[in-house]
Length: 338
Image: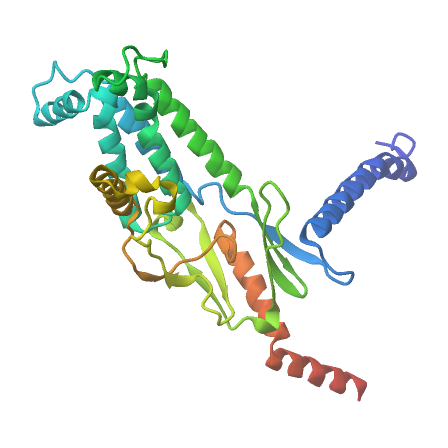
């Protein structure tokens, strides 16, 4: 190609300039929004921002599948199969036909077992959600229960047949949606002065800000699932024992006597009823105590991908802000001045 056919260099630069300017403007807008989100100081710059991995809360998705599976078991027809499991299921369904009490017992067992595991899915919100799922069919069948006991003549709730599959899909999809919403609320940042952990749910949260010179140790905690799915948790230990503790559920919770009329409270029936519900609630929500290094998503780089680069950056900034790093920097400045 001759020199005459080649486009001028000025035209090439003019063609590329709007694209570059748009990219720079977008980067500036993103940086400004992040600075506002993390509420940085004037001389503070974001070196890296991180969010939890898509698979960070995989055990919670397992709970959603367990909810769907429990509903599906009661939707199946177990008459045609003569196995031991089908016989047990048929007995549970027949025993708890009134008010779907068999399903309630199964879901209460799931909630109790999940609580006793004392793992990442054993929090109070997960337990309350499982209890809500468990008692839903009984609440919707309260009119049928009252009719069978002779309290009323006919049911007042139009829902006579509890559709297990429909409610199973509803509760499991809702649980997954709430988990994703909860997961996306966490956002972390590493700046030239500190590390920042924030959680933004319905309203912006303050989070936690830790200066590098207050960090005693930077360590990682990798699980077997994290090794398979490519994520890791990085903990910045400040010596405050944050994230390390004993988790237990007090068994003294129950129905308060102040909410019961004095006449009912002093009667034998009132005392027996209160005692049964109190012991049932204590049994379901009881949680074994164990002391573990339990990372909190609000105070650690929880289940993040590309964790090696984050760890290297944290170690570099931690060393730079340590006493040895400051002394080395002063030594270099003195050597340059001489």
